[in-house]
Image 1: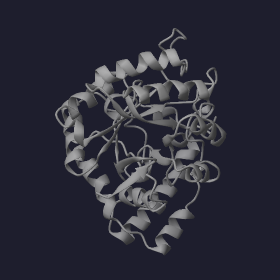
Image 2: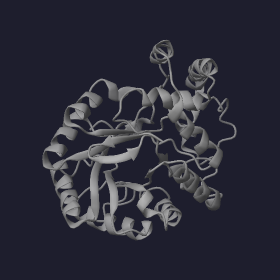
Image 3: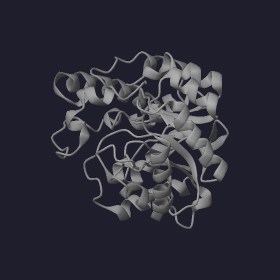
Image 4: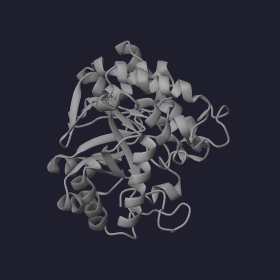
Length: 325
């Protein structure tokens, strides 16, 4: 597995997102043993970046990751996130990146993960009620104390990234980026490269859509968040099937799977990018990791760059209000 730098942090250029093992997707929490085998297989294949968050579950995903990396902690760059759970009484669903909440959050995450330090600690969403300088100041204190080694932001806008980085170096930004969500390209990616900040795309396979396996939402459980995602509903779903078919056509040329092509396209966007495709199955992590060796020609990259844009926003209205701030 090739490696890249996220700021000063060395990671495998393909990571593993673990959210779907414990929350939000059909089949979550159904087989923790298989999820742990998946994490172990990822580590065996050279994946070093494992991504979780306190809100996944909530809390149960960090516990799962903690069990999985026990005895192998020195092989793993553990990334987790705070901010979607308030520890200062703001109420359920309220963003909270106040210094007091961060202090409580980090202690809980360390305990659940079974470790005394977090390699990469992200603010999950920008908290409009706490100046970013105060949030990053609190994170800088955790770095000085050795509880956190690198800090990150998620779905922050360009100006917020600049303000945060001025307080303490930001190692990575995590935001949605894929063949069907290219929003970061206009403003955010140039700022990251100017400042030397790495980029961690989440949902690099379009929540599974770009794999070509999803042709209907009938098999989604009622608590699968894609049930209400604009890109998975109504006419948008039918239009987006054509986009998935365009990816599959390139995959047929390459002799790879659509998922591998979608990941290979991301890897071709720069040596400062480390996508974190999520899965809870061993065979899928094997497929995703194999994208590390997929080479796309200039013509294939051009075809992918010119895909039909996805129909619909990539989050619902409430979710869209939380990003790019």
